[in-house]
Image (cartoon, rainbow, N blue to C red; front, side, top):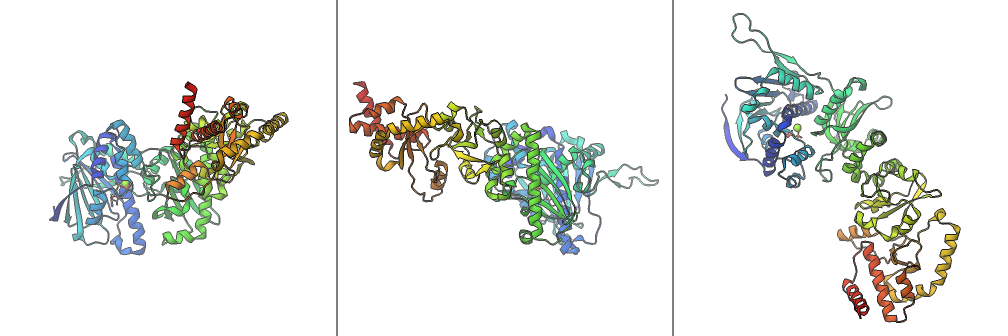
Length: 634
Ligand code: ADP
Ligand code: MG
């Protein structure tokens, strides 16, 4: 053992400690994945070396085939992984193996419940990684040297996974990383050639570089120890270069876990080779579950980019629009230059045409999933629906296609689940219905019971119920679908078009005429609070309702803008009343102007409350209401 200098003991970042604890306690039923994770890291390290060596061939230090070796010692109960990839400097080891750099980790950790079953789901969202070594090992030694550094600048990182790690500078002749796992006594079954071979075949067959295991050979005559011969146990070719028909589902799934750093199988994938003017291969995956940092601005997104098989960069963001940031996978181009940079990617016209083709592939894959696996699509929507709703605003060209993928709650369901697609909606629309009706609001309970729905319920017309924060904004980008325009039922002068019969319309006009006096009186009483007063034809049970002006901001947008500190243009609602309601009849007959005023203000405030708005002067509402109650009780 070489001399160790500058030895230090350092503490893990708090989140690492939590992660280690979680890992050890929740993954006990799936221990063997530690090998997949460490091999995945070794493969990444080799990819990085290959890429850096394009510009600095010296990094290869004279060559040697790039590979991963896995060996074991039954007596010492160790498993050792060795790669000749990029390696780590002392600083790299402290940062990469002592902290978790992912943004939002602290927040994520707060969600841990202590309940192992629940938390083991969380770990999937987070991705496992290097620390999975501690599932089977009670001590891990990492010896590494970064390519390009002197042999004297090797590092030895060592930890028992209990809150701290030791770090020292050591001599390391070969570039790359060697990881020695000292197996827990109950886990010594892993120090076995057969076991390791099977695990590698099962999880890491797709790794593009050779993974070697020692072959059992008999000792030659006169020697005590047999010479070690190495044998490649995986297929060792880039999975995406193989024809689709030859790749098994399990292989696609394991490859996904490697590229996506995910723990679970993907929901769906699409593997395509494009030839012609542009030549590239893409393998795109839809994850099953949203990662914990989907809404973090700095969260990793984008595809792994290869140029003619050589890894070029992680998180290449220019190949997909932002609303598809959850898609994982690789793209391997024959047209780009090996020294392509992020800046070049942003400007290159080749990338633009690849981006639109890849976007279409993803949307097609989602359409197929929605059509063939509706149950799975429901799961997809739960996880990624909110992000998909960013689509119509970002991707004008695919607006109609994205709209077809959207799912909403509607008056046809009774649990607020977002399962209704626009095509389903139109397929069961009423005869003569040429609009898609929707209502937005804060909560499902609120919109479900909104008075705005009364006429629709009466006529049996379905209304989409939109309660996500993003919905009103989304609808401002959607004008129509399949030639049918969207109508916000709380907005403007609701025109049901062909859905109202001629008689209905005539009757409504007559009623409106007969109530002109009441309209005028209400206008005087409500004064500045309203933009307009009119007779409603959308109410059956409620006395009054507030409608939003055709051009005004809706409640949701107003609240979002207000919360972000922006000045919101003042807009007044339209007060509509139901002429057939007993309270309105009473109002119409009220002789006292004072009581008429009180009652109209109460109706106005109630309508605001029913719409989910807050009252400008709640005390005045209570005062007026109490006054009426007192009069009632005498
Ligand atoms: P991830 O692979 O998602 O980045 P890991 O926990 O698996 O997370 O690994 C943490 C980091 O440690 C890697 O990103 C890499 O920087 C470093 N690392 C791990 N294994 C190796 C290795 N064999 N060679 C070089 N660096 C490594
Ligand atoms: Mg990893």
